[in-house]
Image (tube, rainbow, N blue to C red; front, top):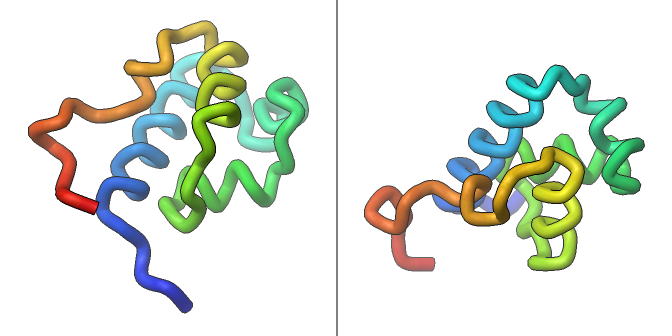
Length: 79
């Protein structure tokens, strides 16, 4: 299994945190965002590199700015 990149883990945690604040279960959120539940789980665990289009879809569903899903640059590492 490929090692998870710390940046993906941080982004996934941020998405999970906002999703829970908005009252979505992972399954309900995935359905609303028209993304697979397994795919969402992989994103939230930092196992999946998320495309910009899917990040936009996630932000639209959560009704937040895309930038809110990404931690501050000073918290991220070089890829």
